[in-house]
Image 1 (cartoon, helix red, strand yellow):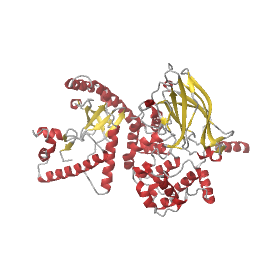
Image 2: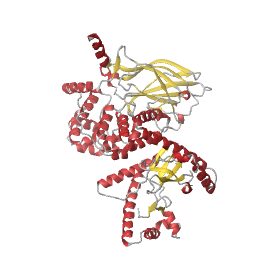
Image 3: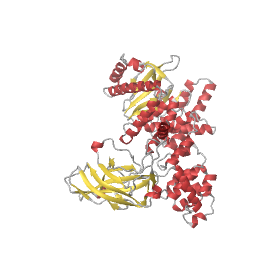
Image 4: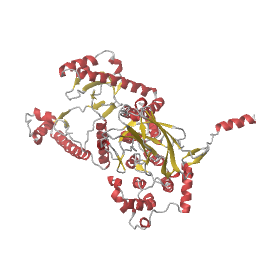
Amino acid sequence: ENSQKSIENKIEEPLKEKYISSWSINAEFKLTLHSIYDLNCDLSKYTDICVYLGLFHADKLLCSQKESSEKPIKNRESVKYEENIIFPIKLGDLPRMTKLCIVISERNKSIKLSKSKKINNKITGRPLAWTNATIFDYKGFLKSKELTLTTWTFADDNQYDDIFNPLGTVEANPRSDECATIKLTLDQYGFENNIKYPSEAEILKYSATVAKENLCKDRDEGSAQDTRSINVVLTPYSKSEKIEEMVDQDRNVIWSKRLDVLNGAHEELPILLRCVNWNKKEEVAEMISLLKNWKLVSTERALELLDYSYPDPSIRKFAISSLKQLEDEELLLYLLQLAQSIKHEAYLNCDLVIFLIERALKNQRIGHFFFWHLRSEMHVPCIQNKFGLILEAFLKGTHISQINAIQKQLEGFEKLKEGSELAKKGNKEKVKAVLQEFLGRRKFNDIFNKFQNPLNPSYSCKGIKVDCCKVMDSKMKPLWIVFENLISSNDDISIIFKNGDDLRQDMLTLQMLKVMDKIWKNEGYDFRMNIYDCISMEKKMGMIEVVLNAETIANIQKKSRIFSATSPFKKGSIFAWIKEHNQTEDQLKKAIEEFTYSCAGYCVATYVLGVADRHSDNIMIKKNGQ
């Protein structure tokens, strides 16, 4: 019996895997390049292949790049290398999120220099393909098995001087039968046990040793003796794009005053992080130790920390800790950015993904938009595997009622997509009749009964008002669809279904307008912004909310019979139209106030965002003056 209990206890205890800390290895980072398969190049010409390799943290090169020897390619099946590549940086100094970036380049005499790329001002030939990989896996272990990396095509119109693509995905190319493959192995330095990046506890312990022995010294005497206050040093880079242009002298000064940033300017954490030498483990340990005592930052700063420039897991974990205080409505406001930030995550099992799935499961409205934000980009090869797995995890945990609602939306979307394809054929009157006949089929009754509005899941429909539907005049022939509200006493739900326009930019612009409106209202300014909803659902497809009781300035001018080349500069027609729909003195006064405030708000917002194409056919006014 005692023996059985002993066995059970051993089973319950997690096995402690033995490993060597990567920080204890002072040897230079080394890998073996084995071979390249299935290269797509012109075999009619004598071609040499060369491989370029660089180690990056975010978009910063950690040490000088390396290149392989040149090898002739005689067939597309394979190019054998079996070549050791040694980088001038110690394994112990490589940060947790080190990314190995690889480019395959061909060289032959017929290549024009204009198609060549430069690395350190050296002509390298024409790049054929690229790939990226993390050197540590999601548990922090140095990858020990042979790596098979599928590549991505290098576009001829790439305008960057540096052919490396450190901001590119680390995901494998799903079209493995159409791309070149690289095989390589990272050196294990003769150790039988796995090599692992140190845990947070080990880093903090090392940081204490660094502080005790004063190993993390100031970089130069001048920075330590700088008498300027930390606020004076930070001001040029605070809330400014100049952070990208920070000079080394200021970087050194800010790093020497890191405790002043911690205690007196904690919101400027992103600036301090740009001053860390991530290829120096002493500074990395010091920074992670400081983060343990850092005050939570604002939502805007937390979002900034989820940018590609801050890949370290400790930083991203801190950013999520700051975002956990958000209420659901505020989280919805920034959900689009958070979903996009997933693209910068190297691993699925990360704080950002877990945070978003948890909040999406707790609130069905968040879950609704989380689903569509990811689903709308499933056509993009470099993220389709990642987004697909996240959606699978979310749907496995969500309530069956929401799954049924999403399924019905997908079915309705497919029918509207089919209708939009019909609308692109024939003249205006003909396609209207064809569309109405298509939407009037009996089999559609079940699909659009209790159909949640994708633009706003708070509203549901019980069917389509076929006679009210039409094909609009725009080039892409969008559909004007009117749904009957499930609650009979409520207004009908009108949407525009677009097929052929990428609505992701529209979504971003409208979301930024909502953020501006929130900021203004927090400061006591209500500019009566009437921001409609828009959602991207698939590649170049989606829905836009119809703003009812509104008219374009062009139509207002046409109805007033003063439409001419100078009409946009005449104010009489707009005033007359507003007066027509607001006939009492109080109504007119209120409408003029609505017009004035909303006009001011949109003028400032669209100017800041650089919104163009603002002509009289593209500006609308509601009957209440907004």
